[in-house]
Image 1 (cartoon, each protein chain N blue to C red):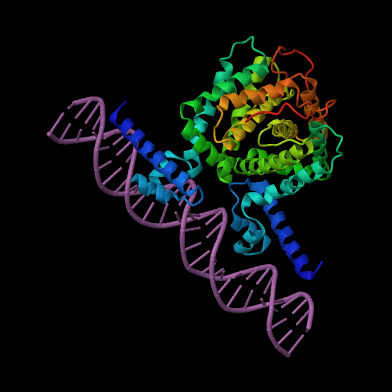
Image 2: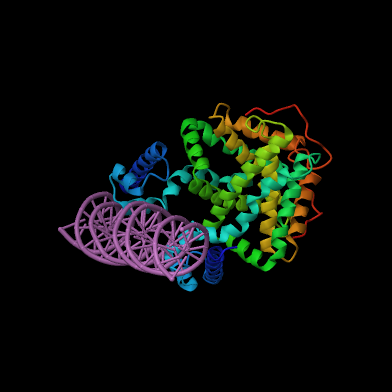
Length: 208
Length: 208
DNA sequence: GTTGCTACTGACACTTTGTGTCAATGACGT
DNA sequence: ACGTCATTGACACAAAGTGTCAGTAGCAAC
């Protein structure tokens, strides 16, 4: 890596660290970009050369992970059932959280509890979903424009993932995210959520 | 209704109409609030007395509908299975679209295709989901903090709804939204999306 | 080592969003 | 007719985000 690139990475890291520290400490809305740039020792203009917005500093961490989702879906073995492949990709996705549990929890909590961040996160997630839907449709040999099944599989899987993520944050990461995600998928598969013919069972509660 | 209230409603309508016309014509980002207020004949400050942001003018239409979702869920017959109740609430939700099909399509398309609007819409949807999850957990006699099933049922149902909504817009409202939503729910119930044990069937495509 | 190209930076000006404040206006009850 | 209350426009202001320009440092070629 050239000196220029290392320098650039240094500024980026400095900016990220300063931002995350301030954001976690003061909250998102009460932290200005001026404060971040002052802490990082660069000009405000420079901030926008590294990040599109204040939201992006936070979203980027989780966003980088999501960006590869459809690539990893394409890499799943061809004989895997569509929904299984998606499930496996999303559970593998949780690996990124395990490596930096504390940081992940902090950022995820901030994201889920800040309107602006939640919106931005979900907006990005929609793109991942679209990418994965396209890839899944390809795998299934189906036209995603006329067949909703790929989109439904992806939507259901992300619904489970988001639900698990929320539970994970609510429980302050007491359990492993992957465990919760798997549990959510198991509930989905188990048919305990069936729309018709089955009334609400009383017991068999789920841990979180 | 007093004269003051009618006056206020008049300003609100004027603002909404001017905004929607400009937004649909020029796109969201290229329309400024100054243009909207100029068209409506009020000051910029007044705009913010009626709407929190530019996004809210658009979101409000669909947002008002969603606001009542948990109320309507609570009004469902007690003997209805949880997932069925949620499904019925969401299909009933589509009624609001049928009355003003053209306007609904226009606004929904704008919302789904504009990043800022999509983010704001999804952020609001998360609140509806939380409300419905709480209500569903109450119906099921379950603690939503330790049992993910209510949240999963709601998440799955909204996943189906959003998928149907996307398909509806993609098809330029060729089919009735309710038809598409029902179709999505049927696919969900039919087990065609099963995670394990079943490989992708070839035929039986879905129309949208 | 000097010259020239390229990339990064800070500084400044600008637009737009969103909020706080204040004085003026007009409806409403007494 | 009078006081009260809500609404409004006109500022002023903070903050986000963008365009532009000159200065500077790395780097390759000569």
